[in-house]
Length: 43
Image (cartoon, rainbow, N blue to C red; front, side):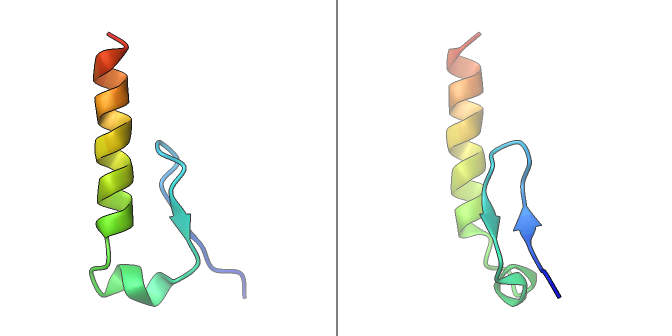
């Protein structure tokens, strides 16, 4: 089966669901922080 975890706000995605479910959120957190900083700078 096709498996994917994706944050639609940042576009960050991974096919390693086990890593995410085990708490491997660093890529998603870093992508969110970069996205959030960009959003704030545009205001």
